[in-house]
Every structure is written in structure tokens, then in C-alpha cells.
Image (cartoon, rainbow, N blue to C red):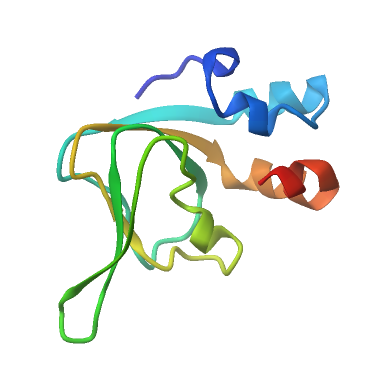
Length: 129
């Protein structure tokens, strides 16, 4: 796990930092962490409680669901600059699908409680998402 907050060098900063105050930037940075995943690792497991808002910095991921006949239904393949948890965070409290890294990948995880607070209090921020 990479603990440093290097948002100023990130492509995501233009989206997230465009309409927030300095205090909100500090709070967001304090609630951010990066994770590295090896090929084949599960990033999100369907049915788990949503804790993080996840952005893919590097690599490639597969979003999928298990069907009733235990077959894998691929929803989409996502690449860098994609929010891989976005389809779940606005629809409930649990992830609706799983995310797996078919190649080594790096995510930027923001505490969902912090993002939700910004969504509820900052319209321009929400509109950027």
C-alpha cells in the first residue's frame, strides 16, 4: 500500500480538485490511499459493503457478476482514468458486482464517506463526477 498523497501529479486531480476548497482538498487527501494489485487479484467483491470510491490509476480491470448458473457475466473492461466502483456507489450500500485485475494494476481509493459528504454538500463537485 502506498500511503503518500501525491494528488497534484494525478490525472484525477483535475476532476476532484476543480470545485473544492483548500480544506476539502486536505480532507480528501487525508482520506486517500493507493493500492497495488497483482494479476488475478480481486479488487471489489460483490455483496461487500461499499467503503471506498475507487479510481483506476494504472492497469486494467474486469467488472463482472456471477450469474445464477455460476457463470461469469462480464459487465465491462475498465482502464486507467475509470472509476471502477461508480456503478455501485450511487445505487446502494453494497457493491453490485466484482472487480478483478487481469494484469498488475494500481487503484486510488478515497474513503466513500468523504466523497459522499462532498456529493451531498458540493453540487459542482457532484456534477464533475
